[in-house]
Image (tube, rainbow, N blue to C red; front, side, top):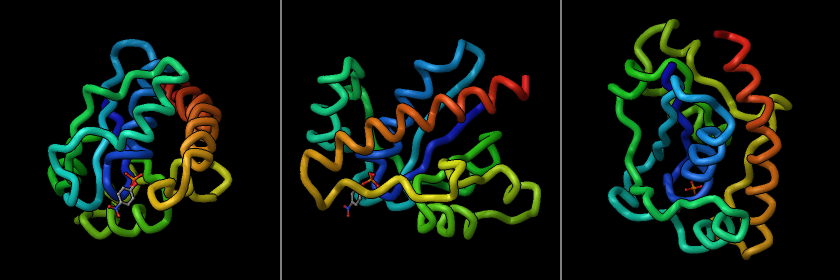
Length: 146
Ligand code: 4NP
């Protein structure tokens, strides 16, 4: 099963969500991430996100940012968006109800994963803790489908 994590820049939230979900799922699941914007295409993850993850034993140094394309929507089985803006932009690339049904807001309570980019270190730590908790539920949801 192929799972995609989506945020805006693919340098803060979704690379971390990708790394954490990989840790929580057995092999047989392929997990990748994308940004709805290609502004940071080819760049590594944000240094602040790399540091926050490293302090918690998660390695993001191999990540390279990639923009979301229409072919990703065909290819992946589930696409989880970090916030409502990412959700709208991802849905705008779909061409059928079937494609739309693969796309979800990550948080089960319908809230956004806040964008830490313009804030300080505290925001990055909060995103790490929030994603680490939420993705336990995401992993369970995916395992229950098998
Ligand atoms: P991300 O964070 O969507 O979690 O990767 C951001 C990265 C870059 C920008 C905004 C948010 N930016 O405006 O460049």
